[in-house]
Image 1: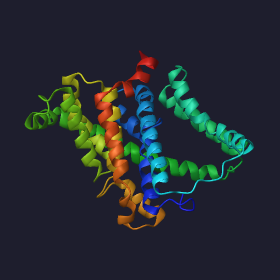
Image 2 (image 1 turned 90 degrees about the vertical axis):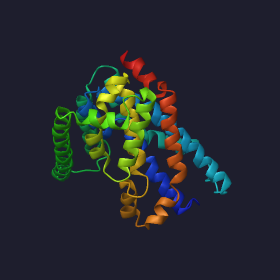
Image 3 (image 1 turned 180 degrees about the horizontal axis):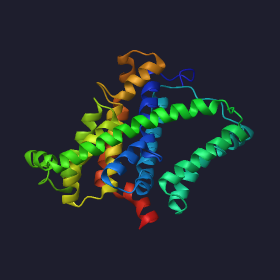
Image 4 (image 1 turned 90 degrees about the horizontal axis):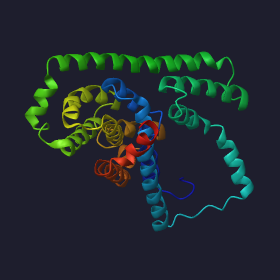
Length: 301
């Protein structure tokens, strides 16, 4: 992108905030954690995240085109149809992953867990048979790395479940929500309160930890107002994604600093337009829940 004429701040901001779409498009670790903590169907969450993910994709694409026109970024030479066909051919194998996940869950072939296992098998076939980019000796290192990451997540989930049980037994969530008046705010008020709480928290803390800690607190209000837990899960996932890319301490910012070796101010300089678009997406979700729930209703209702 830098060679094409885009500025450093714009490029960094686009990369950081585009990663937020991964929170919404299945498989999403944020949705899995929320589903485990709240007892919500992970399959429904996966399907419901597609609509908001595509909405954000369209917003970002429109902004990128507008930016390129205003800044007079030179256009690249058009690809020949032969090159396009070759690119599509190369992309067909990796595109099997969303087909397996979404198609398998939607078609009732897999549960979310089984879809994950099927994807692992598909990845092994691609890497060892089709692309031949890995050797048998690499399996140990891959398994070890995966095991370490999974162990961390499992520890967080275990602690989060224990924390959830303790605060529920002590009726702490009810006391907090009554003190701030969330219970009387109605469905829209509860959604706004949830969005603000998760957004602000993820500006300072890792998203998985925030989901584990805050979800049990808001569960009584969600149940009392009759909100669809799938819609709430999509909004929570979106908010933790936004907070992760928002100053002062969003974890995605420091990941970008470490990877691209750019100063803090340069990394955050281009983020405001993207954060605005993400917040706008959250507002549209609250106003028009069918953006998320339409595909869920088609698939599961």
